Image 1 (cartoon, rainbow, N blue to C red):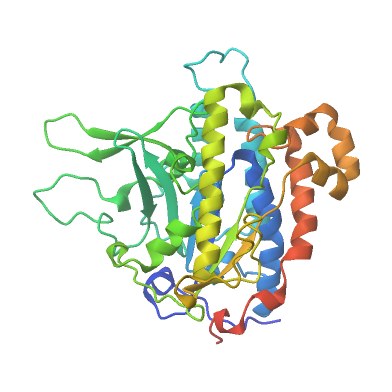
Image 2: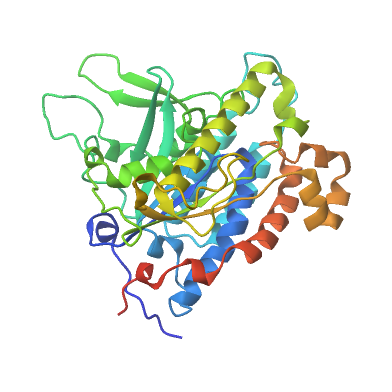
Length: 394
């Protein structure tokens, strides 16, 4: 069947008329395989809505794809125009190669995994010379990281109107964000403390002086491991220079998670030290707060119960008028859910099933992918995507 939609240029995705569509992808280590399980169904549904064109990609539909940590890897791949099947193949290879434990890397100070492996895989996927301004990026991209030496969250994007995208002041020596290598931006977002060493990005280069380099770590240690709220702010706040219109008819945001754990039953490797347990608890708190805010701001057909006191907030919209349409897809990633959904795969894992919430266990990837595929079929529906958000027809 021939295509019945008009492909948009990157410039139209970012600066053309609305309505606008955003995809936001959570961090979570190898649990990003869950995200891809959901995205398979999402891509298939949206392809069917647009004439079953085999060349349809999520980068055709979404005007901005945002990601944190493992979500940044997936987001960058999608923004380059890869299909979900292509991303899944690369992701599985990367996960098994990078998260191969080296038992010589022990101790409190040393990172658990060799950053060289991760760098090599990212360069293989994105190329060494591809930058944030590359024409290979087919739509808007937003990567969430944190600059450790200043303590500030850093959203990095390919928006040409961004304040720091291009340095046109000949007296100033900061490096344009446009010139940042894409693999390095993604690597910065994935530099999870204790798992990988921080990533250095050159920020300022003055003639005859030592370059100033920022130390970047995983965006998950900012409030935006779930980047949905940051993506909404990025799209609508004037300072970011996109200034998209808000409103349920003007803005759709689709958010995909990496599984909610049960902290009271967490026996994974993440609980190895009190410090890591506290960090993960803080990340979960931030994630719940982001979901609360997004449901409070929006009209949503997928609202979940936040807690027993506030419920799902469906009748409690901030200001009485939704600022966007919001869809969230995620699951409870528990042993009980795994056994219920995929009993054969769960049984094969044996004791490894206790580590289902670990961010660095390749052995659980097949099970998590199967779980996500099953739940995606039940939770992602055509009726959730209003015709007003369809791409313009040819």
